[in-house]
Length: 251
Image (cartoon, rainbow, N blue to C red):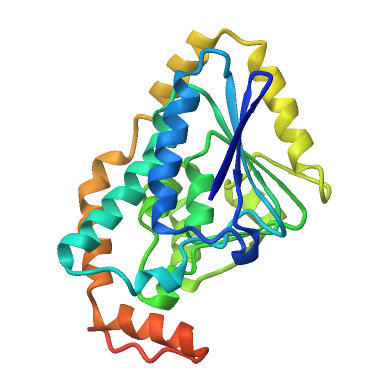
């Protein structure tokens, strides 16, 4: 689902499932982690740009695939796989830039939160609607606190608010908002400026600045795996599939 190419000293990650609005399959997480390691090991690469093909960045996890999860062990493995994948974005030594247009929802929004810099155009819309299907955004809860006020991240998670580009900027989700269609050019501008800096200094700064928040990782795995086994989650998936309003029971 990820198209990988190196142009000059920039590794380009294109989320390339446009017919499904770049919804993330389970295999996406292993692919993301492996390609991040590949970019990190390439001495010619100085930065990474992540963007979406088609009409948006990504609408997050492919809900149709959630029904394929097995017992509690499989659910925990899935959550751990996803979190390790997101964490790999922060762990590589090269700066990772998210260039966003259209929707960045659920896992798509969370992916932007683990990137080092985020630029979006005026069409961008950010949100963490997981509670509408009985889940909560694990990486979003962990990393959102690094960029946003507690009230802001709670508003997004508790109400399912969808933020336009300007409000996302005010909330601290993005570094810059540019006119429609100019997000990739801005990302390339940043990448060029990064290339002019000392790579060891950039790597050291990234490592220190990102070493915060992941101590809550085990609690996130427990919480999300528990929710995936709940009746509310099953009801949320059924309601989404049947295009109706869910009836949650708190069980």
